[in-house]
Amino acid sequence: IAPELEFYLIARAPDPDIPLRPPVGRSGRSETSRQAYSIDAVNEFDPLFEDIYDYCDAMELDVDTLIHEIGAGQMEINFLHNEPLGLADKVFFFKRTLRETALRHDMYATFMAKPMAGEPGSAMHVHQSVVDAKTGENIFSNPDGTASKAFYHYIGGLQKYLPACMALMAPYVNSYRRLVRHTAAPINVQWGADNRTVGLRVPHSDPKNRRVENRVIGADANPYLAFAATLACGYLGIKEQIEPTPEASGSAYDSDYQLPRSLAEALDLLRGCEPLRKVIGERFVTVYSAVKDHEYEEFMRVISPWEREHLLLHV
Image 1 (cartoon, rainbow, N blue to C red):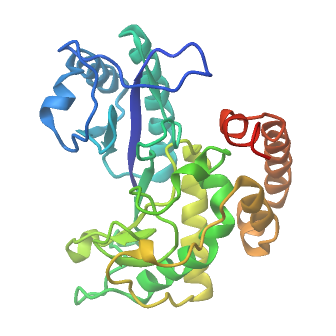
Image 2 (tube, one colour; image 1 turned 30 degrees about the horizontal axis):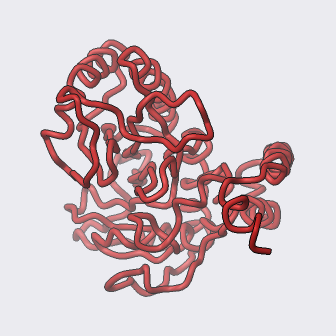
């Protein structure tokens, strides 16, 4: 696998009732506009990122490229592809390292899926492929370079089981604020070649590097659970020989929602999916669901500013 992890740099915000805002850069100004892929925007935070690269090198975290994403103060770090468990370790350590380094530079770094209204959410896109244990060859490609049946079955498994995995890939109530139309996040499990509006993108590549990118996972997901879940979906697809739907063309935002819209709905789907429970572990699913149920009930006791603004004097 190879994860791409998005995050926001934000100004210090000790009061949780005040909306977040981008931090001040070297120029003394905060970002106010979209600066996707802007080198200058990244350079605003060079002192922070120079420290990050030094720390990552010291920890052998194998980070690849850092780019500025669409949101104000939103960045993305890419990891070199490797085996899943080791990369889960590296993502976990990177999150802790970045948050600590940001504090030393008088700002916060957050992996919340949707930290600011009006800005895109943050994802953890995961590129994934499967190699033959004996030959090391990518089983997603036939000897003649064409896509294999295993490749399509893997996509079919992701399509069938991703909705039931969402409690692991979007694990908080905030996670579902990211998964809405026209915000650089998927709303369904359609697939397509180099199509960034679908949940499952197939990047252009040579046969050796044929892979699937899961764009559903949020930056807030536990990397160990998210990687295990997405691989479990693909495994079940190959095992059950699940055929995918036809490839999507055009914008998938115009299609119906196929993913759960809340944590409560996602937990019901997870509990109701026997094949996933068996692969992931019945006991784990029971305990994890109980913890998340309690968390959701706690959230439902909170009255939000939106409710006070729109309902207090109008209902």
